[in-house]
Length: 221
Image 1 (cartoon, rainbow, N blue to C red):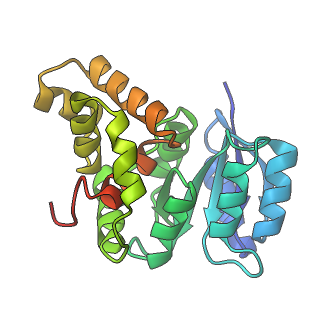
Image 2 (tube, helix red, strand yellow):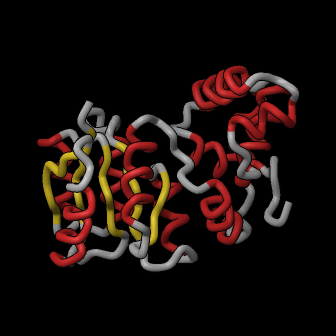
């Protein structure tokens, strides 16, 4: 099955570079290029890509606003957004993840890692680099006030699901969670899927953010 990708970056050379790298995979096809957020939203609606590589800082509508519009639009909510940034400590990355992005990559990403990341997100694997993503969320989450409503939402979880969410927020993979809880990886995946459904969040990234906002886990834990 071919994975369709939309590129959104205001620099033509950057788009050309990513297009060239992705073209090396027979399973990935670039279906469009956007130079700003508004164009990204329009092309996402018309091409319905599996994955969108979205730059954060673009003139006019930026990548954060564009991501929010794409993931909340019924016509494009199945598209997964990977945020592109120059630095993995960019404070805007956290805002983009809160807006619904499924992960992020730095623009210095290695070609093979880029293709693996696109394939992973297209397959529903949201947290591309658990340790790095967690570090970014942790770095900026402490600036946010705890949200009582977020804590109340966790009441819908069983104790095992709640513990699973905590381990996801710590950056553990399904296999690591399974080892920690002495369960099978499939059972760990089931707990995560049920938590995502009960909490009505988009993916693992949103679980991590909710864990911090609710106080289930604190920065530095």
